[in-house]
Length: 224
Image (cartoon, rainbow, N blue to C red; front, side, top):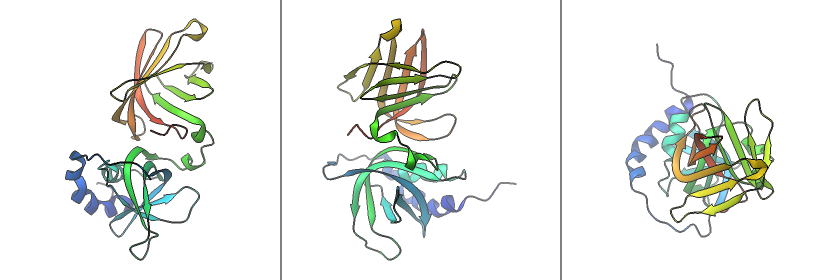
C-alpha cells in the first residue's frame, strides 16, 4: 500500500501542476535590489511559504526567475523533514491575509532537508562548498584557504588559486604539500545522490589520479 503524501506535498500539487511548464522558459531579469535569503519552506492553501531564518514572518513564494523551486520543493516534500531553501530574490509587502508579503525568487542556490542549516556558523565566511559520494568528499573554500575532508583521512587545509571562466565555470586549484588538487564547478542543476538535495552547481574534484563528481553552492561571502 502506498503511503499518503505529506501535507506539504499535497498542498503543493496544484502549484506544481500549474508551474511545471514555466521552468523551461527562463527569462533574463536584473538582480539589482535583490537579496540572498535562507529559510524554511512550508505550504498552506496551495501556496509555498518561505520563513527567513530567525524570523517569524512568512512570505508567499513566486518563482519569477523560473528557478524550479516549486517543483523541487514538491519532490522533496515526499520525504518527511524540515525543508530549507537558499535563494536570491525580492521581498514585497503583504497583499493577502495570512502572510506577511511575497518573495519573488530569481535565483535558487539550494533546497534540501535540514533543521540546522539556518544556524550554520560557517556559511557567511564560505566562498564555496562542494561535496560528493562514492567515495565521500567535502570541500569548503573561504578567504582563508581550502579544506578537503575525506573519511579515514586527516583534514587537508591548503591555499588555492581561483580562476573564473567566461561560461560561468569556476576553478579552484592547488599544488600545496606536493599534491595537485583541482576543483571545477559549473552553473548546472545538481542532485545529491545520497540526500536528494538540489543545488545550483555541479562539481568535479580531481585528486590522486581520480575524478570525483558531486554538487556545490556558493557561500555567503560570494555575491554570485
